[in-house]
Image (cartoon, rainbow, N blue to C red; front, side):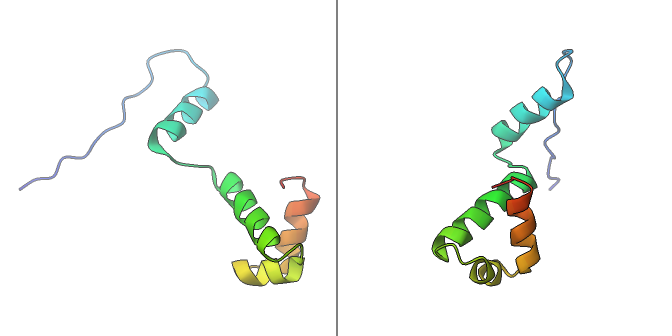
Length: 75
């Protein structure tokens, strides 16, 4: 029995690619990795009561990544 793959319809309008991607992400329930990273770092910092080293350990990443995320204003 063959399985059919769902194919995405190509946009036939002249909308900007960013707008099309935003609509597609919303429809499919996909978040950009940067947004997911920001949310997880924020959650870990909250659980660790602001302790950046502990938050990094909870996430399994280096403390430098936490500091870089905060420094870049992504949080």
